[in-house]
Image 1 (cartoon, one colour):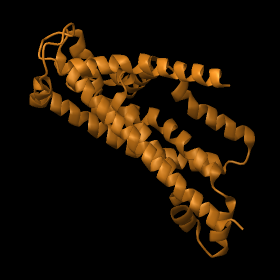
Image 2 (cartoon, rainbow, N blue to C red):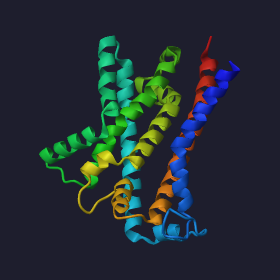
Image 3 (cartoon, rainbow, N blue to C red):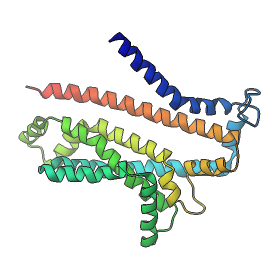
Length: 270
C-alpha cells in the first residue's frame, strides 16, 4: 500500500512537471533582458512595458474581455434554463437524448466546430467579426454551464420545493427563492468555466474572426508566426496568471456555495 502510494505520487508529480514546465520556462524568459530564449542575460520588465504600451494589443485585450464576459453571461442564462428544463424531463430516454446532444459540442473537435460555424455564418450572411465570435462563444459555452448546473439540481432535495409550495409559494417564488439560491454554486462555476474557455479559445475563434477584429489567442498565434519575441512571453504569462486567478475564484466560490447548500439541506432534514 505504501509503495503504491509512492508510485502514484511520483506519477502525479511527473504529469504536473510535464504540463507546467513549458509554462514556467516561458514565464522565466519573459524577464530576460536579452532577445532570445537561449540564455538568460539579466532581469528586466521591459517586455511587460512593451505589452502595456502597445495600443493595438490593449484594444485586442478589451475585445477579448468584452467577448468573454458577454458570452459567459448569456451562456450562463441559457445554460441554467436548459439545465432546469432537462432536470424537469421525466422520461429517461428523452433526458438522455438531451444530455447527449448537449455533450456533442464538448466532445467534438474544435476544428470541426469552427468550420461548422464558419459555414453557418457564411450561409446566414453574418459578417465575420464581433457578432460571429460572440455567437460561437455562446454556443460552445452553453453545454459547459449545463454540465455545471445539473449536478446541483440533482443534489437538491425535493422536500425544499414541496415545503415552499405548501407554504403558498408560486412557481416564480420557488424558482427565485429556493431553486436558484440552492444551485448558485453551479451557476457561478458554469460562468467561470465559460469565461476561461472563452478567454483561452483559439481554434473556433480562428475560423470565425474577420479582418480587423481579433482576440488575444489569435493575436498571439499571429505574432508567434512572425518570430520569437519576448513580449509574447510576457503577454502569455499575464494571460496564464489571469486564468489561474479565475480558476482559483471558481473553486473558492464552489466550496463556499457547497458549504451553504449542505447547511441548508441539513436545516430542512426531518
